[in-house]
Length: 201
Image (cartoon, rainbow, N blue to C red; front, side, top):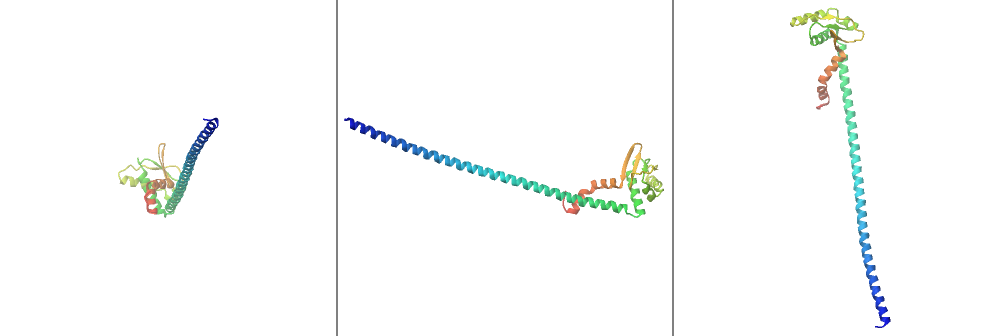
């Protein structure tokens, strides 16, 4: 074979090999580009979905916070209504005619007495309103129920307004009107709320 033929053959083989390498490179590049596009699309999709989830979670949290705030405001409003009712009860008791008010205080003392030998302490205004004989009348009532009736009237209190204190030794029980109603509120508030708002608390 002549030198020209050999050179031509080598050139043809080289060209064919170069074409094959170029084709393979183009194929590989297309595959890489396709994979990169798919990965980029998946990444974008994941980020969009993550952002959507975070937005949904944030919306849910804000909704929950808003609902909680609304529940707090509703509860506070209900408490205001209930407090107004008990305040009205206190005002009505304080405004009772003297005869009925004396009966109210007598009943409170009779229910509070434990030994029948306690000391009852009133304010100056209560002493004037209730009358000096109230302790004697309560003692007679206790004795009629076969209980010790040896209550005594203690010194006038400048701190008290309405109601009384019951003292034996160092133990002092508070039966001011505010304290009486506070205890009654603890006992009856759920029922009052149920009646007022037609719901179980």
